[in-house]
Image 1 (tube, helix red, strand yellow):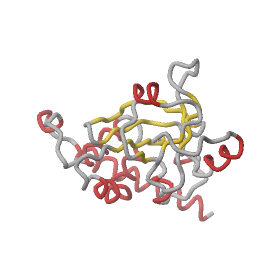
Image 2 (tube, one colour):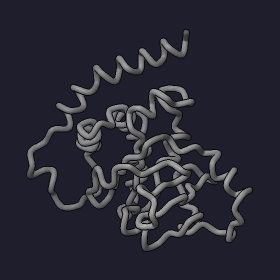
Image 3 (cartoon, one colour):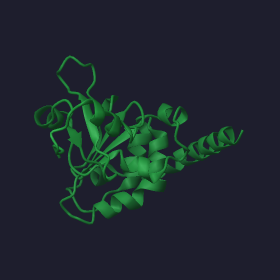
Image 4 (spheres, one colour):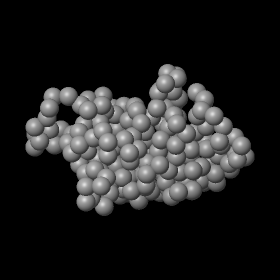
Length: 197
């Protein structure tokens, strides 16, 4: 009963804030395409996510992730890649809503990953460091290898480059990454002893 109540409250909060996020994030075209700067307009990123069907993650970005992301951008050269689970993943999740910060850190990589980088720099079993210390993502399929979608921790990357301003790159994934996956795979696949990144 409490679980249904928590999900209902989350859905109500999500629905009521979607309009706010969309209105707050709307900006003139000129401001969207300004040169790179140290400032990231997370309201705009949230609006883009909401428009693309990632409403729960848009809300999570503004309410939970904003302080973490802003802290990462204190370093001017930082680029972050954020993997966003689709709305359905939030409703089917084994995790509480909103998701804990530790789980969300597992969806942020402290460097650039895009289709080209993934194909050129990774191989199956590569470990990709995240903002959750000691829990890298594991590359489980690559673009162009016969797989319909590349995947990390056996979770498909379904939408490449939902947002990219050079400092923050956002991709859509079909589900949450499981932080215990790298522990399981480490027992099955011998490691080279280091992460690729």
